[in-house]
Length: 139
Figure 1 (cartoon, rainbow, N blue to C red):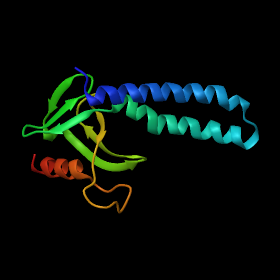
Figure 2 (figure 1 turned 180 degrees about the vertical axis):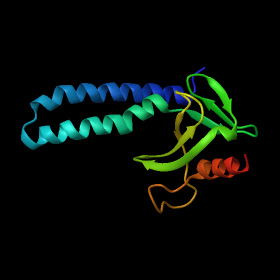
Figure 3 (figure 1 turned 30 degrees about the vertical axis):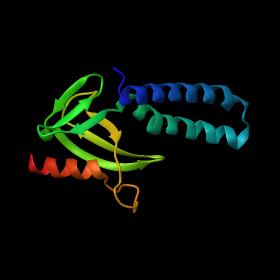
């Protein structure tokens, strides 16, 4: 069955490969500062933006017993396993980063979040981040 997270992961993987191919083909053609800029910015963008989406993207749902996670399979994590969560604005998405006690690949989870009021900062907590923080304080 096709879930949104599978499509998102496939899209991110294709985008990552296309970006690498574009960088390998276009960077050698650049000269001077453009080449230096590309050599510095391309890997940073790849490592901090595209690869986390492709590798750590998950579908997370809050349930009574914990987090229902679809990430290389389906599992439920108790709220006591959540170490930290923060919502950030990763252009153009509001994403929730969750760090758990579990080993990789469940150590870092990267999922969608949604703001219910106008944005005031890049690290403003969204709807799911506030709900998760409230439930992990009780656990």
